[in-house]
Length: 123
Length: 390
Image 1 (cartoon, rainbow over the protein chains, first blue to last red):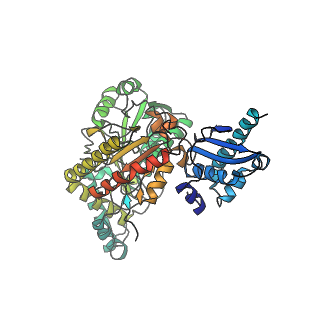
Image 2: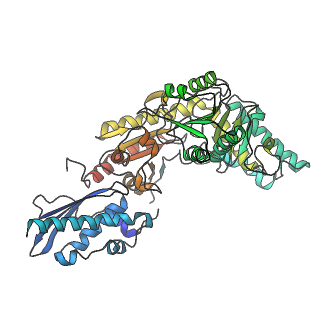
Image 3: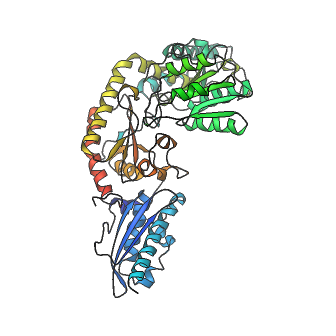
């Protein structure tokens, strides 16, 4: 399996790792395909994602996708963050091996869930 | 300056020994004859493979004419299992839940064709349930196929005990042993273990790739898979891989010459690595047994809360080569069937790493792994949502 340099970079030094104790929204997803899991935390201010952190149990592609997703979502409005697709995450990473595309799904699903959680709590 | 790499994936393949390379070379450019030819070139090549056959036979207490050369472990397993099943026509085949794919998928194909297949359970250390074996052997049982030392977790089955159970229940049942991982690491005596068929591979023992052998006890009926010339006593058609066979025999000779010295050294380093990982890293599970029932070169740990491919890649960045049973690194995204058979939950088998040593592994290399590994595990666990201490 050949990973792009960008994947390896985010795998070696992932951005926005950790937990937000007083998060406004939390998204937890398990990947039924391979067993990877991810938890995503968001802090929202003025309908913008002010802070975002993740924890991932998974392979290099899952960790790099998580890291890239947080970079893409940080600072975006909730409306724009919702538009981030798994292909956008994969493209920003310089592509993922076909068998690893489900890993970028994990990250976007976690973000969707975190936003849902935020919207439920802040109606 | 480039770091010196540490190769701990010797159950995948091994470095070819320098003596082996030297032994092989003349068979490309000087003694390049076809062993079936009548002239001197042919006779020289024939003598070379006859000598190699003698060498291999001696290592397992077999007779020369009972060794046939193949293209490797997978072909040996295929000839043994398909060959025996097709020669017998119908009946029961008994195997285990922890076989290498070369056996597992061959048996599966025969099951699809109508053979009755029983797959024996193993306990949490990977030992075959011998009572289940005994009761599974019936009058219609044609073949029992067992992996000697497991390729993933290193569990060594007691093949002498198994051979005796097989032959006392049904003397007409063939006993096949896949010794690809154990050959020249664990003593094998085909008579003591009542083995009829035994698979060996060259590239796991510092010989070249693309060559192996199958021991076939005199009188064992095998159907031929590959049709062609009469080579290897009509059991395996095709011009013999003379350089490969010469190299394989040389590798076997080297390993048997200092058998106790090199297996004791591996065992010492294996146990040092196991003890240090258990001491320095919390929440780990050793897969497979400890002590003399474990292949001298095998260490397999599950590191809880993290995933194997991530560990593998971090080690790779440090120049350390290992393998993993994680679902993420398998082509079908399924976790290892061996780790499932010993009862590991999927999330734990997800974090499994196999370190396999060789006669060339040094104490310094093992020390280096012991120094580097805890930091990698800690770094990945800091990312993990499953790690409750985060």
